[in-house]
Length: 267
Length: 179
Image (tube, rainbow over all chains, first blue to last red):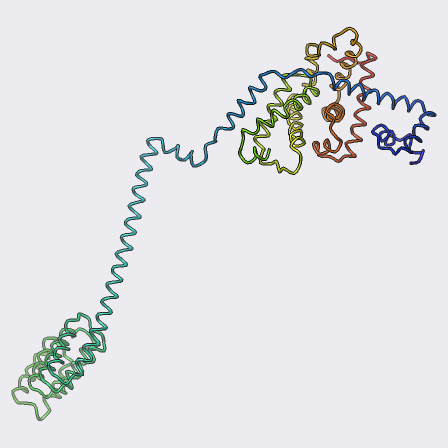
């Protein structure tokens, strides 16, 4: 430490606060001997420090009992569990009006939930029913198609009756019935097919198939039955095929008369 | 304190019993008023309870407590700008008997002047001298309490001591009077 710094406040502070090394302290105290005004000032500060220490030892008056009482009252109050947000909300429900409103709102909400749940269940039931019906129809169609291939006419009639039990048969079933109407060897089978197809004559596929079948019928019974059906359906498109049928040489005369009468009524 | 922080509020009673005298003593040396010191002790422990979640547990509880105590005191003096005029209101009746003895009149007088000189200082300088010279706190701890560094605190305390000496000398010489 340079003697040039001895007059600086920082050096004097470090001396008073005991931060100087032993060597620096001795050198500084030697310098103080030649600078009594600084030495006096520093000694006065040291003396003041001692006075403060003395003052600090002066007994402090005891706090009154009120300090403890007030603290423990505060602590007791703070130790009581504070109402949580949930508690406050539940507290609100203790009010009669709000309680009635809450019950009402609860009932409405429960009703909405129950209704919605019931609706979902109903939808589920409908879907299940539809799925079962579709499955049954598919099985039925397969049965009809396979039975129509059987050599027994009775079985084929049963197949057609089975198809007739279905309110909305598939297109392949209609195709099979129309083929039966044209190609089956047995008149009774063909008549049964015509009866079932007549029930679905509103369907375009069926109506066209019936018109096409007119000229291909060789049985008088079916020729008359088809023409009667066309008359019942008021199907004017049937006039041409009926005329073609009349032109055929193997058509019986009584049948021709019946067909001509049908044409006249349709026109 | 960590137990208080975790919700065991009743444990604050233990901390109060352990530190109330030191805190009260600090305040009394600062303001020389029993009632005001008690009020501020009470406020400190309310603040401790309110801000317990801010105690991180790394430092000493005492340092944290004195940090709060200092804020409480500064708040009080901010709200009561002329409160320093009341300093010393209790000194006559509160001084222990031995200080009233004739043989110690001079010492008593000197102590009175010392506290009067302290009362004339700013609250910031006064608290540094009280913490350092009267409460015996280390410079490092004081630095943590007031949010400064150790060297700066040493310089500020040295300068506060010099200012106190000037005021004390003037009181001793009768150059100034304190009401």
